[in-house]
Picture 1 (cartoon, helix red, strand yellow):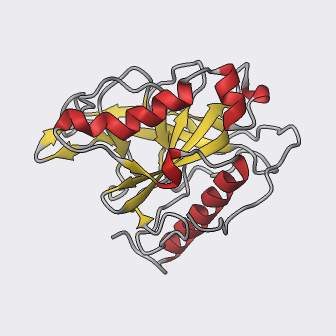
Picture 2: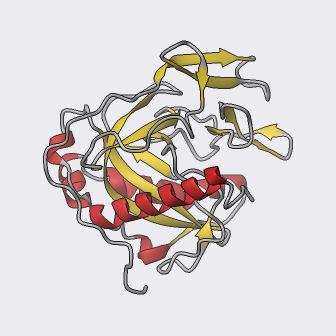
Length: 256
């Protein structure tokens, strides 16, 4: 598609991880596999905090690392997500037509979740995808080797981004690796990821393209013919959605 307008140079200095100011564990309420089940994130003082609004987006001063909220651990099927419309934004299981949602296509290949302090504004039509946002925090796929628990919040290093087009909305999928992963320093691009985790990015791309077929729906489409954009483009999208979140918090915009 058109010329990318949101490029920023990717930082190349070795990043120093800044400790996340907030999380100190999780608190589960309700029974798992029920509509009442919630996972709350707790702050250092033991009180509940919002994983969406109270956790800083950037994990280092260079802004090469971001904090990540793990919603769906690798190998699980429950479709968990931050409840953007509930107090303190706990993680809950998505409901479709009154039923708890599970991936029917198969378990998640990666740790999957969201970036705090980001929002994909439906009225913000991206110049490249020609679609507005999906009204949620930005999704992220952690390709690191360690399976992390639901509600875990940790620093990750983005190296690319896919633009899934879901029913006329842009649904960005940031590709990243746990900053503590032994291979994190080696991965600065999708090409690097293809060397050190052969086939993993392609497998994830096809998984998200096809997973709704198990629910009787068609395949998902991608902008850029499914190509993952580079780190500079990725960090530009993250910065844009951070600005959109600021407008949401200030009251300039509201959740659709």
